[in-house]
Image 1 (tube, rainbow, N blue to C red):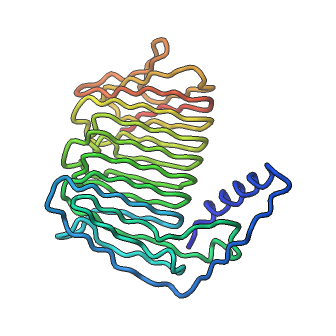
Image 2: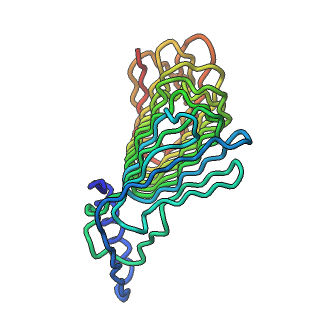
Length: 289
């Protein structure tokens, strides 16, 4: 079912849009729901490497896990609006999987909670670039143990939990996450094995947990609006957090030390260099056992 919190956000945005003009006639979109249908998704590993996988998802629930056997992608899509049927397009090593041609041109005439759109997919361990483009949705991503050379996530009003419970098998050139007004928690980030990471967000609540094994020096850039950002670094890891003007409050717990506009942890091994640029809000620095 459509997440209730996401539906509330959509309603608020719609009301704000309507408030901007008093002469707008908003059409009513006729949406027809039916019984749940389940579509099987199965994409073999392309001959060329790395694969370039793009997942374009509208609204609903998206679940991603490792575990595809002898395939790049396998899983199911369950929906009850015909236009939500997923499309799979394969061009060499470029694979696009997207929600069908469903568009809302006005206010829907049925309750959003009556709409079902759930993708439950597994990814194989072949080397791949992964891009996830989503709207108002709930996401649960377990990406540990995959072979991601590049990861890009962009979403809107989202509630997302992304985790690397195991080390990424190859070096990730870049991890980029761009989100709107959302609630996002990223865990096990050191296991992502990235060289560079960019996190951009609007207003919301965001947790970036760099637990795992840091295999090389890594650069992280965080840009956020009026929000609450929590950064967690394991004790014993060398880390430097540089903040810029605009942050209204910085709270620390653990072994963080301060020098000018920098907070740092003394540790061994590679160094995690984090730059934070926030319009306003709270920055929480934490250490984990």
